[in-house]
Image 1 (tube, helix red, strand yellow):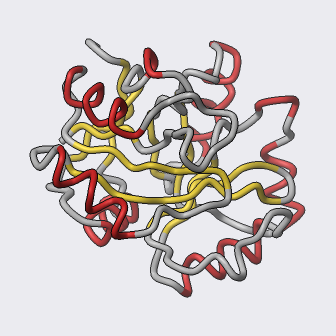
Image 2 (cartoon, rainbow, N blue to C red):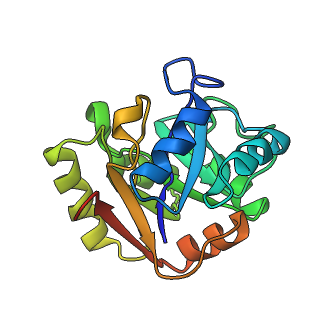
Length: 203
């Protein structure tokens, strides 16, 4: 199954111009089996996700969140309460809270904007569950740096995502799962078990 696990809509992310209904149509058009909407510091209400599912019943539609944590953004899957996942939270506290809720934490676009990703992990004495190794917002240098990191750290799941804020990049990078993913529980388990293969569209 092919998923895009990092995307934003204009409903809850002010820097996105994507209409949610347009998003689900485009996701199907580019051959995705599922999507995870990850607004900035905001979870979609479940009843609103269900409305999208009714419009596109053959697309798996799940909700996550991109937390603006101290040191860099982190994609969180399988969480339902953002009370202790506010902007500026440390990675160490974020991972502890995400795991307490039964979810997983994945670094979004590491090394971007000069982020010293390795040093931050060491400083905060933390291990994430996965790392985004390719997205629309990661150039060749960032992708090489992340590939080098994952060679040293095979315990990290590797994900490919679009980080879409505009409709034309939806699904440009994606993650193929080696197991069925039909729910958040499936998604969390697949990332924990590293059943992920990052891909470029038409690769």
